[in-house]
Length: 284
Image 1 (tube, rainbow, N blue to C red):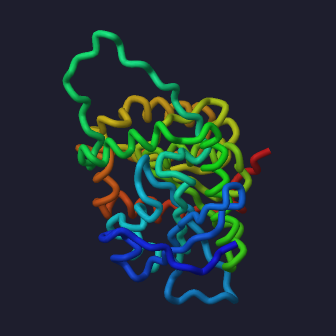
Image 2: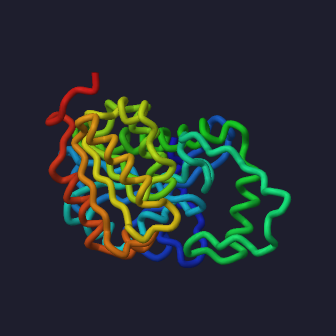
Image 3: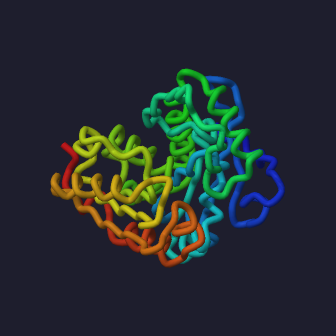
């Protein structure tokens, strides 16, 4: 499915800035569109050996290679021997199959004061995201999930992947997508990690992947995904007897607490380094 053509990048993107990260694309059969994804393969890759794989899901409105730019992530993957792939999820606001919150109409007496900008975005970027949100197709959840699984399948076929060491993680919207894909495909993943995840996992989702170890990261000063909601989800995980590690970062915001904090990000790799699928309980 991969056409082998590198995807054109905007100036300053991760693929353009870091030559260790490959920009790739494939043709999305359902729509005929060329869909991008980013890939990192350790420099010492040997096809005669099995390698662990990390699938990463970006936050809302971010480009497909966004996670590849997190401080230290490529260094950690090279050091620990992980192949990493980050799909777009069909659109930057795709959601990876997770159900979208219903739109709420503004009250007739809504104040004229503009809403605060999303973290790390200019007014122009926020307006562009709003336009994209309005133009998403009705079946965006299906298409977004399909793109992730297509990319996963491409990488799984091309490289010698260790089936006991396939990991899924996501930040913000990517965390909500991680919950969804973990619940829908619980037998694939050896372990999960989420950072400031939204939307929160539903009880029925937790039940589906209750035998999959998970690392939950949250900043206690996050104003986008409130810590109380994440703590509540973690409490539900513990009630189910899940193998759950919760790390709350003091003073941590929504984005920089992991994207620019090597200590926080290193916990994801430390967790994935010690968990294999053949060491945990069966899903069913």
